[in-house]
Image (cartoon, rainbow, N blue to C red):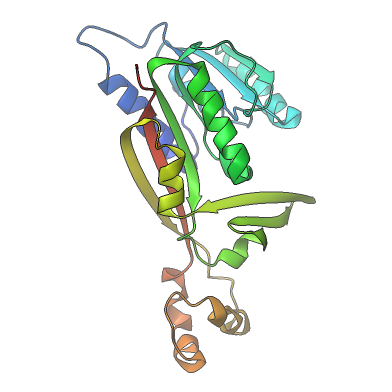
Length: 245
C-alpha cells in the first residue's frame, strides 16, 4: 500500500511526527507508542501517517459526518484507527493514556475559555513527559474581516456551508499564555499568502479601513496591483511537553 500523503495544509503535522521521532532514544522506535488526535474527522485523517510508523492511534471529533469520512478512509486503507465521537473539552480517556496528543485546525473554532479547557484535557491524558502539538490562528492574518463579525475580542463569526462558524484569533502574547504551563519544544509561525485575485478595485478600496499601516485612500488604491502581498493567513504552532514534576 502506498504511504498516505496528507493535504498541503497539514505539513505542520509532518513536522510533529519528525519531532516525535527525534526524541526517541537510540534503537527505540515508534511502534506501540499511543497517539490521540483531537479533531480526527475528515477525508484524509492525519493519524494515518502515525499509524504507518507503528503507533497506536485514537481520534475524536465532535462532528459525526466528519467521522464518517474518516471511517470511509479507514475501510478503504485498512489502517487501524480507533475513532469515536467526543468533545475535546471533555476527553473520554483516563489520565496519562497517551504518549502524544495533538489537534490540527480544530481548536481554532473554540472561544478562549474553551480553548483553555481543551488544552487542560490534552495535558491530562498525556503521560508525564508526553508531547503535544496545537495551533491557533494569529491576529496577524489579514484582513480580519475575512473571518466575519467580531462579536467579542478576538472571536469572529461567519456563515460557512450554511452554518455559523466561529474562529478565535490570538496575539502572540495571548497564544504564548495558553502554553505557559508546558515545556515549550518548538514554536513556529506559518504565513500563507493567499487570496486577493478576485478582489475588485471597489472591494480593495473598502479595505482601506483595515490597511496594515496608515495611508491615504489614494495611496491605498495605488497598491491595488500589489494586493497579493497583503492577503495572508497566519497560524502559530506549538510543540510542547507535559512536565514530569
